[in-house]
Image: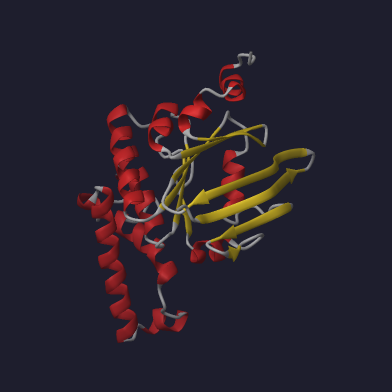
Length: 256
């Protein structure tokens, strides 16, 4: 039996006269990999930004794991269990890989500002545990050997893995990935696919934006398609792939 994790209904987002999201409704179930596709400018990243609190929607409803997150701040969204990566990698370039992941883990820390400054035994112990967990996550995503390297010195594929590790450090229930395979070669893409499957198998639901149609069709349980800010299709990969409106939106071919 499926159980809804994220539900949005009637989401609208406008930028001046541009209606970037128009009456979007989605339900993502626990334990699935849910794909979000569409042409450039379709509204995919805008929807991610709404779901993660970076943009405030104009209208609609948004619940996550039974909690109302409509128009909540990003830190509330993260604390509730939604983590994300970005289309353009956003790492702390001059910090080590380990330090980048530790930054993500601090959202679950208990030390106060004074504790962080005065560093009593409890704060030092928590910091040590954060370091251990960060190293575990670097191992989990396949880059433990780069723990002490600066993020800016990692290869592109390893930077993508590092960004995923940092997101996982927040202990998310939903991991939202914005074009994680962009710029990857076929080998890196296959390795990324295996990592996403492992993440899902370990209990984290995934919401995935991706332009690699082969990857998304072979990985996702269900897929939604956006075009000009509207949802034009949703369903199983094979049904979406053969949908005339989807074919038209991607290929410029009029449906029969």
